[in-house]
Image (cartoon, rainbow, N blue to C red; front, top):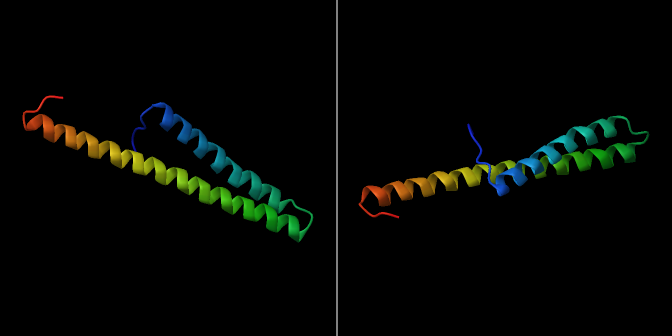
Length: 85
């Protein structure tokens, strides 16, 4: 994706991506520094959940981008047919 529109939704989604992606690394570090196997397993699971959340937010961005291109093409078609919106 070359550009991201800067409406409020995109800004909030981008913030979520930064938070969840940052949490992956932070929890991974905590897992490696844990003193017990139980602590390691817990932090590793949290890290995995954050990775899943990050993937969700990135898919949402991709979906929004696809929708944007779809509506632009619909408006161009309507314009080319002579309808003015």
